[in-house]
Image (cartoon, rainbow, N blue to C red; front, side, top):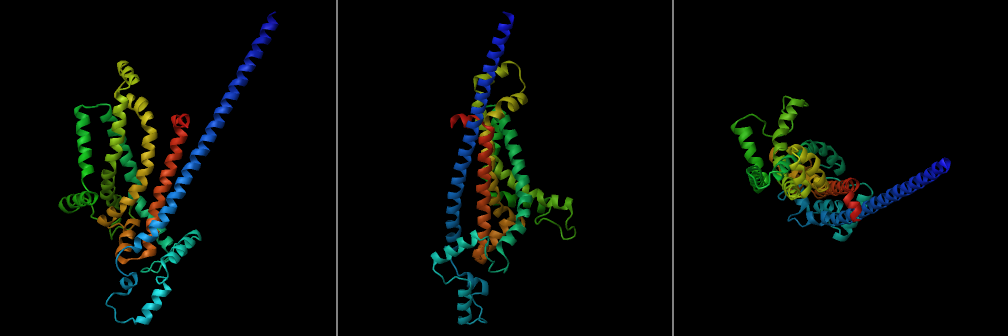
Length: 354
C-alpha cells in the first residue's frame, strides 16, 4: 500500500511538472511571437517614415529661394562666362527635371553614395562622419543628465502632489520650458562667459590647449547645460503626472501606511510603473536633441552636424544639407525603434495587451 501511494505521488508530480513545462513553453512561444510582431510593426513604421524623409529631404532644400550655383561662384562674379556657367550647371545635374534628380538621389543613397559638397568638394558622408563625434559630445551627456534630472524631480514632485515642493518644481520647469532655446543659450553665454568670465564662450578647445581633456570639459559645460535645461521639462512633466496618478492608488496608500520611506516608494512602487513610458520618451527625445543641436552649435560655435546644417543652408549646398538632415532624421527613427523594442521586452503589460 505504501509503495502504491509513493508511485501515485510520483505519477501526479510528473503530470504537474509536465503541465508546468507545457505552460512555460507556451508562454515563451507567445512572448517570442509578440516580440517578432512588435519588431516587424516597428520596422514597417520606420521604413515608411524613411521613405517620407527621402521625399521631404530632397524637395525641401530646393524650395529655398536662390540659385546654388550663383551662390557658389558669386552672383556678381564676372570672371565666369555664361557658357562656363551653363556647363557647370549641367555638370552638377541642376538642369535635369526634378523627377530625374530625385531618382538619381535615391539610387545614389542605395549605392551608399551621399554625393559631394558643392562648396567643400568633399564626400558628404565622410564630412558628416567627421562631425558626428563632436555633436555626440554635447548631446549624449545632456541626454543622460536630463533623464536623471527629470526622473528625480518628477518622482519627488509626484509623491508630494499639490504640496509646496510640487508647485515650486513644476513652476520652475514651466518657466524654463517657456524660454526659447536660442534665448536661454545666449543668456547663459552672457552670464558665464562675458559677465562672470568663468567659462569659455564657444568651441570645443582653446587654441593653446588642443586635445586637453580638462579644457574640453570646460568648453562643454555651457552647451551641455543649455541642452539639458531645454530638454528636461517635458520629461519631467511626464514623470510628475504619472507619479501623481499612481500616488492615489490603493496600494500606494497601503505602502505609506506601512511606513515606507519616500525613497523606497519612488524606487520600488512608482518608477517601475512609469518606466515603460519614460523609456519610450527617452528614445524619442534623443533624436530630437540631436536636431536641437542645430541651434546650440550655432550659438556656441561647435563645428558639428548642427553647424554643418547652418552652413549648408546659407551656402545652398544641397548635397551637404540633404546628407546632414538625413543623418539627423535617421537618428530619430533608430532611437524610436530601439526604445520601442526595449519597452516591449521589459513591460509585461504590453505583451498582455497584445
